[in-house]
Picture 1 (cartoon, rainbow, N blue to C red):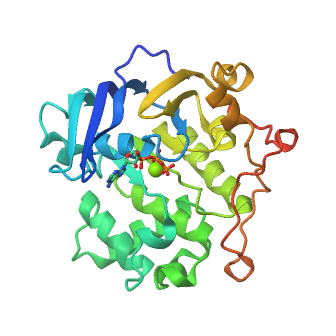
Picture 2: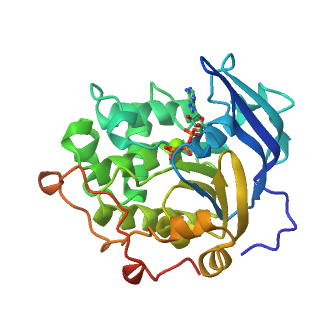
Length: 299
Ligand SMILES: Nc1ncnc2c1ncn2[C@@H]1O[C@H](COP(=O)(O)OP(=O)(O)OP(=O)(O)O)[C@@H](O)[C@H]1O
Ligand SMILES: [Mg+2]
């Protein structure tokens, strides 16, 4: 763990997002502050509609400008992207990458895995579109990094030919194309079977250990938060109701709201991947039996 003397990778101060809706203005994010250093995972956890995704999308400036009014300060690796809105273009997909929520819808069904990965590599500036050999080599390397077997073969496949767990690995490979220092992962495993979740979370921890990346993890699942996080911010109605290190929040939740989240901790299954044929598609992580919870929290 770092000594916290260096500049944070992400520093968010008094961040606020107001959404302009037909029903009026909703303050979806109400004055939140947090920071993430290299090698750290900071998790925002909260119930559905508490404002987690709006916080992440607001930081990344991915909300439509005419519908979302942002205020406060967001510094990415010392660059104030809230003061200079063009500055986000210099960091998004470079210093900063997003792992989107649903692997089934985040990829284009009509393009091969290879062509989608090549596009990410080209945008990251890691190889030119004309240099097919370099694109292929980099794509294979990225798929190897996320432990996809026989990468050359997978590049020719289309999303429907891969399992949910493999698709999530492809999305992580796409996010890694630019060698980001900070990953924003919005519910990276919530669309996956419980048995596949563990493998993906393990991969993120491994990448973090190898490369010292910072991770902003968004989840509604305290089991995931507990396994991954250095610090947790518990979000309700757009605000953080409590913040602290993972052990403190799990062992001594200060609010009834956090206790409710705790009572729905899921069981993380073994670190294997379920083949597409045996996926049920409907399995969800929330198994309200705290006695069966994952014990392997992040050291
Ligand atoms: N496009 C939109 N139009 C209107 N209201 C919205 C829109 N997007 C989000 N909201 C509102 O903003 C609030 C925060 O939503 P947000 O999607 O950030 O929650 P969340 O914590 O990510 O929830 P989930 O766990 O379901 O993903 C909610 O009250 C939601 O209804
Ligand atoms: Mg969300």
